[in-house]
Length: 390
Ligand code: N2P
Image (cartoon, rainbow, N blue to C red; front, side):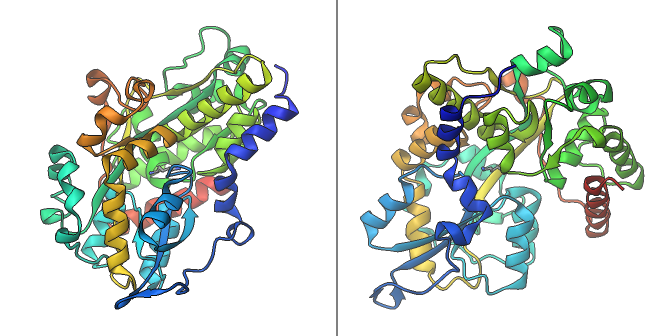
C-alpha cells in the first residue's frame, strides 16, 4: 500500500490543527484561564471553557464571542481523567466543562464538584430530547447539574484496504476479534494499531469481546482483561485518545480503537484531501462490532467554583440553539441531544449508522456504570500496568 502523498498529509495535519493544540496548549495560544476582558455589571466578559479536542465547529466559539461580546479562553483535553484531576484539585478556573456522563459526571455530581444550573437562564432546554433528559435523572435528579451535549459509541476505526491486505478478504471487520484476537493483531502490527488511553472504554471493550459484563470490576474480570491485553500488547504501538486520528488519516496506522465521531472526522478529512489531489480516498470505516459496544454521553457542566457562571449559562444556552448544535454535529460527526436540531443535521450525517445506529445495533450498546471506589482503583492500577506492558 503506498503511503499517502505529501499534499494529502499536509491537508490532514491542517484539518486537525485543534488536535495538535490539545497536545501543546501553550504553542496554540491555549491560555491559563484568565480574567482579562471588559466587565459588564458584576461579571467580567470572559468565559473559560475546557472541552474535549475537536468537539465544536470551526466557528462556534468565534460566533459566540461575536454574538455576546464575551471573550472565550478555550482549552482542550483528551481524557476524562485530566478534567477530573483539575476539578478535584479545585481552582481550575474553568467555567464550563464537558465530562462524560457515566461514570465521570455521575461521580462528580455526587462529590459536589458542580454548580446547580439556573434553568431560568437556559430557555433552550426546551429543545432537548425528553427521553435523554429523563435517562440522566438517575445520576442527576431533576437534571439539576448537567445538560447533555453529544453521544457516541466506542468501536473500531479501520483502514479497510490495509487491513484486508494484511489479513485477507475475509478479515473479520465486524468484530472486536480484529483487535483482540492475537492472530489478527500480530498480522496488523506492522501496519499499525493504536488503542484508546481510556480505561473505562478499553476495559469494557475487552469484557464485551470476552462475552462478560462490560462493567464488571471483580478481581476475576480485571485479570481477564489483563490477559486479553497481555496477548496483544506487543502489537499495540501506543495508547492515546487524540493522536490516533492523525495516525489513521495519514496512514501511520491501519486499526484503532476509537470514538465514533472521531473516525467519522478522519473519514471526512481523508475524503476531502483525496478530492483536492484527485486521488482515490482510502476506505476509512467506523465499525460498531457485532459483539456490542459502549454507548457514552458527554454532558456540559459548570464547576462549583466557576467565576463566570452567568457567562457559562449564556454559553450553554447558546450551545442548545438548534442551528448551533446541528452545525457542531455536522462538523464533528457525533449525535446531539437536541430534538429541534434533528432536521438541521446534514442528511449524510443523519443517515450514517456510525452516528445514529439502527434499532438493532442499539440493542447491543451498553452504558458505562459507576463501580465501587476500591474496584475502580484496582481497574486503574491494572490499566496502568497493561499500558506499560507489565
Ligand atoms: C471528542 C471525543 C469525545 C468522545 N474528540 C469521548 N467521550
